[in-house]
Image 1 (spheres, rainbow, N blue to C red):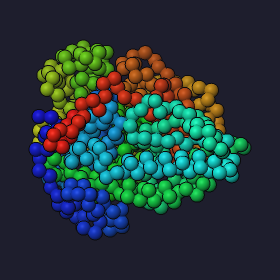
Image 2: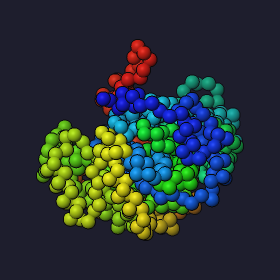
Image 3: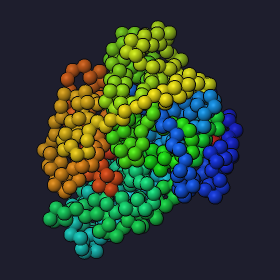
Image 4: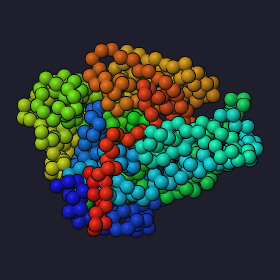
Length: 553
C-alpha cells in the first residue's frame, strides 16, 4: 500500500481526545475541524512549573536526494515510546509546498509511521506558512511604498526580499517597479522560499508574541546613503506584521496513525535556514510529556549543528540523546556508487561509505558531548550481509545501534530503539558548542568548517569579506552562525560525496538576520530559492473523481 492509502485506512481520534492525553483542557484548544487544533500559548502559564521531559533529537547522515526517513524514524520512535508505556510528545516542523511539489512529494513520514491528517499537513495545514508569506510580502510592499512617497528614511539599498512557498528558480533574481508610473523606482530584487524567510526564523525562535514583535522590529530592510541600517521599527511596521502572525505563533496539535500527540510548528529548511521547529512548540512539549522527540533537518552537519549552536543556546535546552539515522543506500551513495545502483548489494561501497556515519557520530559524541545511538532505517532491499557488516563496524567503534522497521510496523518496529533511548536518557551529557559567541565571525565559521565538516580551511569572496567587516563594525559580530550549504556532502560541493581529498569551504556571501539573531553564511552554489527537478512530484499529484488527493507520498 502507498503511504496515502495507509493513512486513509486508519480511523483518527477526534483532536480533543488527543489533547486529553496531554491534560490540555478545552479552554486552550482552538479546533480546525475534527483532526487539527491550535494550542493557545497561554497554557504555558499553567504548565510552566511542570518538570521538563527528556529531549531526544533525531538527525541523520548526509542524505540521498529522496532523504533517509528521518521523519519516519521520529514518528516511529514516538509511537515506540508510547508502546512501552511512556508519556511522549513529538515536535516536528511543518512541510513546505516547495519539496511537496518538487522532489519529495510529502513530508509526514511513511508507511505505518505517519502524522495525520497527512494531506492537510502537507498542503495548507492551518495556514501558518501562508501567514508568514503574507507578513514577509507586506513588509516588502511597505518598503517600496515608503520609497514611492518620498523616501523619508533615505533608502539607498533595499536588502529585504519577497518570498513564496514554492520552488521557483525564475524568481531568484528579478527586476521590479517597471510600470513606468511617476515616482516608481525600478530596482533589482529577488525572492526567497518562505521557509528561508527571516520571518519564519523569528517565528521559530520567539518566546511569545511580544518577543516576536520585538524581533520583527529589529529586522534590517535596507541601508541609507550613510550606510546606516534601516529597520522595520523605523518603518513603524512591526505591529501590522505581528497581527498577521497572531495565530501562526500558536503550535498545531495533530496525531500519529497510532494516536500519539504531535505538535507541528514552523518549518525552516536546514540547508538554507536553521532547520528546527519552534522553540514555543518544543518547550510546550517538554512541559507536557516525559519524553519529547524532535528532529533537525538534513544531516547532522547542518540540522544538528544549528539545533545545538542556535536553538539550544537561544532556548537554554539540551538533548538527552541524539538519534543518528542512516540507511544502507545513503552509506553506499557516500561510498562512491551512482544513485541508480544504491539499492543493489555492494559491501565495498558500504564499507567506504560508513566513514560518513562515523564522522557524524564522532561530531555528536566528541564535539558536542552528547549521547548518541545509530538508527538503521531498514529497507526491503537491505541484505543480511550488509546489515552484519555495518553492525560489526559500529560495534568495533563502541557505537550503539538499533535496526528499525518503522515504515512496515510502526511503533512495534521501533520498540528496540525506544528502549535503548530510554536507557541512554539516564546517562550524563556534557553539552558543548562548536564555537563561542565572543569569537570573531571568521573564527566561528572556521570552527564549524574544520571541526564539524572536516574541512582544511575556508576561502572567502571579496564581497563576503567586506560584509563580515561591515557586520562587525555595526556591532552584530557576537551573533551565532547559520551556514547555508549543500545537504549532500560535508563539503560545499554536492558531488563530492566521499570527501576523500582535503577540501575547503567557499563562502560567497554573508547575510545579517538581525531580527532572528543570527548571521547566514552562503557557501558553494547554494540558493535561498530552490528550483524544481526535471520531473517534479507535481506531475503525479492530482485529485480523483471522488475528490480524493492522489500522488502525495
